Length: 134
Image (cartoon, rainbow, N blue to C red; front, side, top):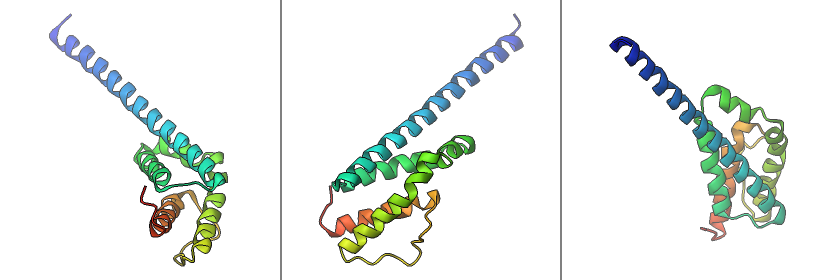
């Protein structure tokens, strides 16, 4: 095998390893997001959500948002996430009402997946106002 062929084979092998590494990292980000979302849903259902739960979900969501377009679309168009947006918005409004907190005017009645970060940030602010810094 010539030098050029060896370099080409080596480059192809390296590119293949890098592609597998990126896919594994994407898979892990997506798995972490779904796990954090599931934990959040359970905690909000129990009325025991904490700042840590919200922080974990925010971090996982941030990682998902940095994924390549196709992988990101897999998450944001997932029917399970779309179905959860209204309960997340409702929980934010209920939490605000229960704690005499006014929500910004831009909190729509028809939440979209792109609003997830906004709702989580608002929930975290309300909890911080209650003294939950954990």
